[in-house]
Length: 90
Image (cartoon, rainbow, N blue to C red):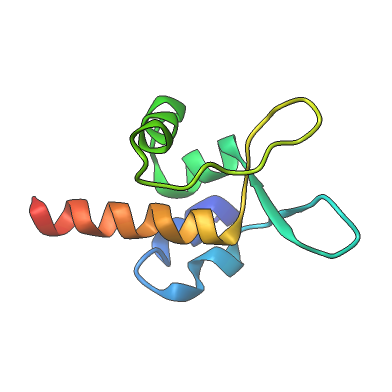
């Protein structure tokens, strides 16, 4: 089973973020997730992520030198809360 599917199957636990290989972008060992990693983890489109950011549901992720979004663990937790809230409403 690939690491993305393992992470998705663990979505209900708080440990699911640790199951995804994050990209370390600096010497302080901060964890950064690329947009495609977050999309695969939560099975949402890029447009959905960007819309949630635009609507203020998630805080704007930092960007790299190319202006690409690099999602933090905090951003991933915010996205998880949004998805859980959507499940409750449905």
